[in-house]
Structure formats: C-alpha cells, structure tokens
Amino acid sequence: MNGKELVRITDVTKVFKKTGFFRGSSSVLALDNISLSVKKGEILGIIGESGSGKTTLAKLILGLLKPTSGSISFADVRNHEHESRKPAVQVIFQDPYDSLSHMMTIGEIVAEPCFIKYGRSYVPEKVRQALESVGLIPVDEYLHKYPHTLSGGQRQRVAIARAIVTQPDMIIADEPISMLDCSIGVDILNLILEMNEKSGITFLFITHDIAAATYICNNIAVMKAGKIVEYGPKKQIISQCSHEYTDSLLASARGEVIKNY
Amino acid sequence: MHEKKLLQRLQDPKGLIGLLILFFFIMMAFLAPMLTPYSPSDASSQPLLVPDGEHPLGTDDVGRDIFTNLLYGSRTSLIVAFSVSFGVLVIGTLAGVFSGYVGGNPDRIMMRSVDIFLMVPDLPLILILAAYLRPSIWNIVFILTIMGWPVGARITRAQTRTLRVSGHVDFARVSGAKDWYVIRKHIVPDLYPIMITSFVMQSIRAILSESGLAFLGLGDPSYPSWGTMIKYAIGYPLVFFTDAWMWWLLPAGICITLLVLGFVFVGQALEGDK
Ligand SMILES: Nc1ncnc2c1ncn2[C@@H]1O[C@H](COP(=O)(O)OP(=O)(O)O)[C@@H](O)[C@H]1O
Ligand SMILES: [Mg+2]
Image (cartoon, rainbow over all chains, first blue to last red; front, side, top):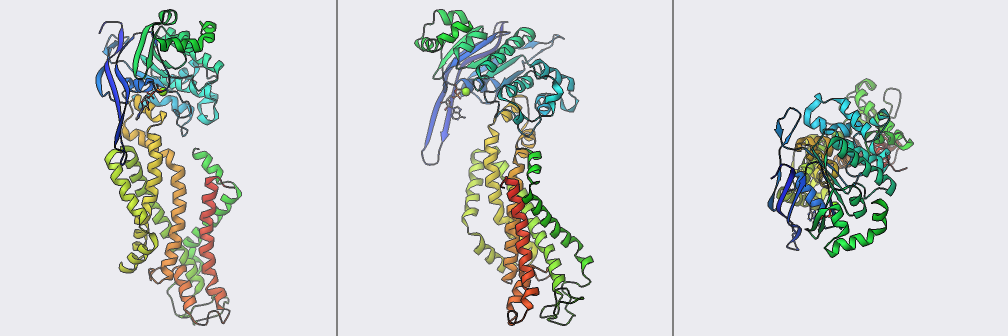
C-alpha cells in the first residue's frame, strides 16, 4: 500500500445467502471480485444503478458486513502528535427518515458518536460546532427538537453533523441526496465539498446520479451488477468513457452534466 | 412517535375518562380497609339484609357485607391484571428482543415454540390447568402469564427485526456501539408504545379471565372476587324473585364492565383512536 492510499479493497466478493424453509436456498452475488483504492483527501465517486452493489460495498468498508472473500485494509493515519492509528470512518445514509432515531433529540443524535467514543466526558461544544458547520443555526433552536419536526434536507444536515462530530478521516456518503429536492441536494453537495477542502476529510460518494458525481468527485468508479466496469479521473470518465454502460448513464444525464460541469 | 406524543394522546377525553376510571378502582383497592369496617370473609351479620346505613349494599346469603366484598374485589382484579401484564411484558419483551436481535437458529426455535403456544386454544387450557392446580391467585397469574407472553414476544420481535437493520442502528454500530448499547438506546425505547398497548390488552384479558375462572368456581377462595360474587348471587335460588339482584349481582357486573372499559379507553387513546 503506497503512502497516498487510505483504504484498499482487494478482490472482494460478497454473496448473500438466503435460506428459506420451503424454497431451499438461493444466493445473490452482490459484489463480484472488486478491487479499488481510496486515496487520502480525495472524493471518490461510486456510480451505478440501483441494485449494483453500492450499498453493500459501503457496508463492507464500514465493517457492518463481512466479505465472503477478499480483504479490505486501512492505511494508518497520523494525528497531530504523530501517533499512528487506524483511520476513523463515518457514514451518511441515503434515507434521512430511517437513519435518525425518532426517540432522540437532534442534540442527542449528534452527540451520540462522542458519547459512544468518550462516555459522559465528551465535550458538548463539539456538538454545537458540528451543527453550526452544517448550517443548522441558531444551534439552540435545533438542539431540543425531534427529527420528525425537520425537513428532509435539515435531517440530512443533522446526519452530516453527527458524521463529522468525531472528526473522522473518511466519510462514506451513500446516496445522500437521492431523497432530497434538487436545490437542497446542491446545498448538501457544496457542504461535502467544503468539508473536504477545509478539514481534508476523504469522501466516498455513492450515487446513481452522474451529474452529482461529476460536480464534486475527483475520481469516479462505475459499477454494474457487482463489478467495477470503469475507473478513472472524472474528466477521463466523461470525455472518453470506454464502457457502453457509462455512456448510457452520461447520455441520460447530458443536459445536467453540461449545466453543472 | 415518541414518549411525549404518547402522553399527549392520553389527554383526549377518552384517555382522561379511562385514566379516571382506573384511578377510581386503584383508590378503591388501596382504601378498602378505610371505607368499610368489615372484613370480606366476615360472615357474622344477618344473611340477606336489605341495604341500609350499616350495610350499603346489604349482605349475602351467608351474612357477608356485599359492599366490602366489592371493594376488596377490585384488589384481586387489579393484582391479577397488573401481575399478569407485568409478567407478560417482561418475559415477552425479553424473548422478543432476544429472538429478533440474535436472529438465525435461536430465532427460529423461539418463534416455532411461540407458534405452538399461540396455536393452543387459551380458554380450555386455562380451565384444565386451573382445575388441576391448587386454586390460588398466583396459579391463575402464572397460567395467564404463560399463555400471554407469546403474543408479546411476537410483536416485539417483529419490531426488533425492523429496527435492527435501520439506519440509526447501523450508524451507532459504525460509531463503535456494542450490542447492549444498541438494545438499550435504540431498540427498547422504540418498543415503549407497543409495550404499553400490550400492557393494556393483557390487563383486560387478565381481569376477564380471573372473573370468569372465579365464576366457574376455580378462583382463589381467600381472595374476594367479583366473579365469585356473581357466582354466589346467581347460585342463590331466589335472587331474581326479590330485589336482591339489584345490590348483590348488578354491582359486581358493573365493576367488571367499568374496569375493563377503563383499560379499553386508555388503550384506544394511546393508539390514537378518537
Ligand atoms: N442483506 C441482504 N440480503 C440479501 N440480499 C441483499 C442484501 N443486501 C443487498 N442484497 C442484494 O445485493 C444486491 C446489491 O444491493 P445494494 O448493495 O443495496 O445495491 P445498491 O445500493 O447499488 O442499490 C441487490 O441485488 C440486493 O438485492
Ligand atoms: Mg443503495
């Protein structure tokens, strides 16, 4: 693993086995021998239609699922005191309605990662800073609200705030804007860009929308049916794509790509 | 739907009436010794007295004060109701959460045994068991709990399974949460609404079953029960030929109906019915 890499995925395959009582067992090949590396500080886009295995890949990196075969390794990162440690990875899920517990206030939700990590001795100021930096101001107005009183865009901002509150090295954003209105989606994209530039957080940006990917990503990997069919810098993917699937994605989004790019 | 909303729901008229009825019976149970000078088994009065100042509802055929028995009867009903629903709640929730959270083979085994419990018809089994076991109130509580927990386990398990794969649980895991934290903070709080509804349902079931068993003579003789009162009243051959049924039979029936109605109202208010 060279110095620039943060995560390396080597020959990862994931098979979901379903064992039914009557229908016998069936299996789904969700990821088929995937290799990919995420470089430090970049925004890597993963594009693919629904069912192509994007979320499965994200969950494998997050450790929520175990690969059937292959390995996922993390490079050590150094903090300010030059101690090396494993990188901290956080996540923003697609559905801002299901990903925030409706039994907790916004303050509790954003504080949760700190609470899990440090126990009761976490710094409450961090929570306020996180909410401020995602634009939920004035913070006091939101701290004691419940998620069901917020709009989809505001909820997704809360989800981003709790992802950045522990200052992770990498954030996996799994289709963070696919359930939001267009204009709100652009705000969220800008927020991701800003955090990438200011705090140097590496992003894995998963989407089915090639326009959004071209707007913020440095590199793009295109997935289809559990395989990576194309990988390269954004410009290369757009201008000289070699796979017909990428071509069809581009064609369907052409109008927007030109507008945003 | 979180706790606050649940309490708000209780504030509509139905919920308030329900709570008021429950409060009335709880007071009745607690204050029974202060409200009457007699003991429920004290048979020293004249039998079959007509209501007067000393005996507000008269006496029964063996000379027990009916009003006293009515008061102490609410104790029995409430003890059975709360013990059974508490037992069902604890066992059902533990089993359901465990089964849904662990999944796999333990889940399969647990759910098959729940299915078997659910398939066995309640009432005949309760009757048989009650007839063979010693007629004690705790045996009744035991039987009703054993027959009731699978219902609780089924619903908590279903909810646990959906929660286990929800985004906020995944997020907590990614942040480093252990199973115990996830269950305590993300799963159990979400079960409060169904836990409360199941508590109410089981209470109703327990009250009706206890009175029914007592009516059939399978109750605990040392605990005065509304069901027993109805049984003796109806068993007395002349009850319908005099006015005695008005103060002997009717009040016990009204108490059972009212108490169940109280729980029904609270349950409906919690579920958001208007
Ligand atoms: N927990 C699971 N059990 C069984 N099959 C699954 C599971 N999760 C995903 N799959 C299957 O894996 C494939 C990829 O799913 P997913 O990664 O969610 O795709 P995407 O996020 O790109 O839409 C789909 O065919 C899906 O049905
Ligand atoms: Mg997905």
